[in-house]
Length: 288
Image (tube, rainbow, N blue to C red; front, top):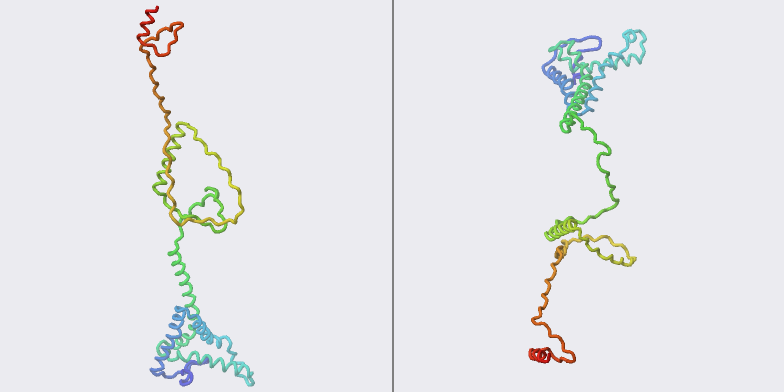
């Protein structure tokens, strides 16, 4: 709209003065603020890098006439080259198109400042993405340090062989029986066994060993996996009564029979058939 419906104010060779309407001044101010300041900043903030690359490519057009425009003597001669004349027309059109939106700002900030605003599009489109990339990098580093703080002093590494040797683990699936708390009967039985073993050690009484049971004949049968009991364990058998360790007291001796009368001497030639009586004693005395 600026190029087609309004005459050029900034040309490559000179400035053509003219008056600007209020609408043209407002549009020039809006264009400069949006494309030079707001759009590069907002695109970098929202990580729309493709917008910044597009602005950078648009801003690079203004530098083409500065470095590629042919010399005046090459296009003002009697027989100039067609290629150079065509190149000069294209570069002049690019320059007028890029400078036309900022022409109305010359009434506010001057011709020199208004003509130099177009050169800020390329730097602003490249600077803001770099600035936001650096800020995001330091922000992520700060957040990661706050979430995972490193210790100030690292602990000394432990010795390689300081602990006991680690038993190698069994390969495969290992199923262990559930751990069940000991019942009161088991606790009582274990206490009785410990007291008995302590008493045997103190008195040094040999305990008869159990005769070895003959080993059962091996029968080839398919091996079955261990069965894990799911019910509660059976109570332990009651312990046998303790055997007294003191020797039994000797039985009392029976008193001997005391004879009440002395036996009479036997009379030769007389055979006594019964027990001697008092009459026989007296007869014996008379006989004697």
